Length: 233
Image (tube, rainbow, N blue to C red):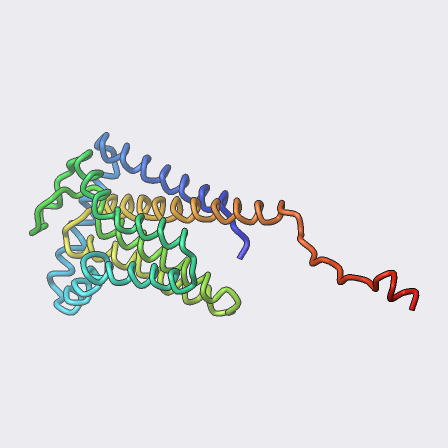
């Protein structure tokens, strides 16, 4: 596959910009805060009134954190190790592991209270589930695209993985533990992190390809010709 470090870097910067805009809007108590409350006041009562909806989103929300997400991330790295992509395995593995420290750090910078319906502790902005799901499932989709590079169905498989990201984010709103801007910011920051990791490894691939192309081609020595004595005879 042709490395595209600039493409992933641009995607990462765009996601960071979206997160920055959301952070400013939330911190300044703008209209998005009122939109958050309006959405939350409509979604949570609906979920509680329909047991099937509540059970579904409780199942979905577990796909964005905890043991299951750890196994998904580990499986992605194992696939890269089997393919002997050592540098990509190292960077992506460390990046996914760092999620457990990034989320609490960012939450502490904003200290936004959760919706009044929330029955869990901790700050609300950004959503850790949305951040984790965006990071891990984005990495998984990139792994699938590498493994099945010649398969025409690879984009469909990657799209199916990507659908889990907004689904997990929606579950946090429906269960009343996050606001709309929380999950949107979590997804933006998670994608920014995943695309940044991809940009680093793509840059590494570019450097390796450039070094390989700059090395002079070595040709095997020509077989020895007939000796002068053999020629006279």
